Structure formats: C-alpha cells, structure tokens
Length: 310
Image (cartoon, rainbow, N blue to C red; front, side, top):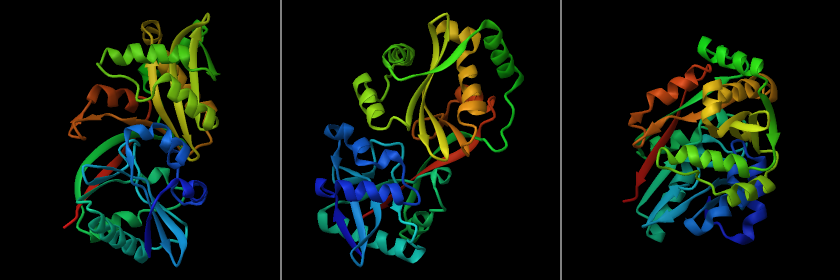
C-alpha cells in the first residue's frame, strides 16, 4: 500500500476514479473541489495497492492538521468497489505513517453519510475505530425516503393547495442571478451569506449542469421562492432554499419542494433537506427541523472523527 499526495498531473486519474468508485460524488471531482482552491491548501491523498489506485482522501491542510475536507460538506475516504475491510485498515495505517513523516499532528475526518453511497462503503468507520479515532461531532440531516414518503402535514398540504389555486408556477431557471439576490437578502437577516458567490455558482453550474439545478416559484412573473438542487444520482439534496415575504405567506417554498418530491425527482431514492445544527452539532434549530419534518423528513446523521498523530 502506498500513499501519494495529489498534484495536478493526476487530475484525470483522480476524476476517473471518483466516477467509478462506490461512494464518489461530483463534489469530489477536481473541477468542483478546486473552484475555491485559493481558500485552502490542498493536501489530498491517493492510495495505491500494488500500483493500482484503490482509494482517495479529499483533504486540505491547515496548521499541521489535515481536514477531509474543510471546503466540502463531507469528504471521507472514496473507495473502489474492490476495496475490502482489511485493505481499508491498512490504508489508515499508511495515512497515519505518512502524516508522521510529513509533520501532520491531527486528522479531522468527515464521513460520507451512507445514503450517498452507490454501494455499502463503511469500511472506513471500522478502520477509524481500529485507530482509536475520537468521535467528536454529530449533525442531524433531514431526509425523505422517496420510495415510501411520509405525507406532508396538514399545514403544508394547505400551502400547496393555496399555491395551486393562486396560479403559482414552478419552473427551472438556468440563470441564478435574480434568485441569488433574494437568497442573499434572506440570509443577511441571519447575518450570513451564501457559501458561493454568484460568479462561483454560475461557474459550477456550467461545469455540472445536470447536477446543479435551480427551481423557482413565480406568480405573474414575480419571483416568490427558489430551491437550488445538488443531484447526487441516488440523492437529491436541497443546497439552498429561500422565500420572499410574499412567497412565505403563500407557502411557495413548500410548493416547490412538493413538486420536486412528487414529480421532478420522484425516481431518486432520497430527498435530502440538509442539517439543522449549529455549534458543531450541539445546538438543534428546532424550528428549522420542524419545517423539514412537516414535509415527511426524518433523521440521518453526519459524523465527524479525529485521529491524534502521536
């Protein structure tokens, strides 16, 4: 087993492996990862067994620590279909040896939730256990099982009916500019901003047009609400959601989600509504998660570990 630090000469090899892995997502494509590379010092690793690539670790380095990956929602070990449990244990042993030799003193690891796997891929969690990794954080994400969804609450169903009767229309928009203005205004009320700038989201949309999509609710051409979808094959994830004041009164965001769940993405396995946590998972935003649960969502956890390099 051999550990190699990623460099640009391995760009195509990396991307091809992600596409053919059992738990890779378009987030791990180097084009996506590198759009904000000025914010992070990349320290991604490639793992070879008998000179064959068997795993990747998307990661960045800061203050002699490795994070997998601070610029992504998660970024655990990406594995080939052929990788087995014993191999994965060896991979973590080799990664730790590599960290010792390069002066890294700690690894922070964000596991990929199993709903995003193409095929079972939790060998990494067992290997972390074998390395006495410390479990230090857990977020809760809300997910709808699209093969057997729980019905919207009565309040949410009333909002859907109200939008239908009012003539609200749902459509896809390739241009994110108007919606980004609304999204930014909404988030500013909570003293935050979208993770992506408008230029960044347009760039990413141009590179991943089938994976990143915007759906809007409008009434007489007025923008009421929008949802930006990240489509991960089995899972449709709501990356950004926002309502205008008029949209909120009509329930336009509920209407978009209803249409996406029952029509646009009904063939997927899961519809993910994201996390509802602050303070590294220790605070639950009960009002936010209640809104998601009223649409039929239930809990899936995102787990975080760290390994102290001795």
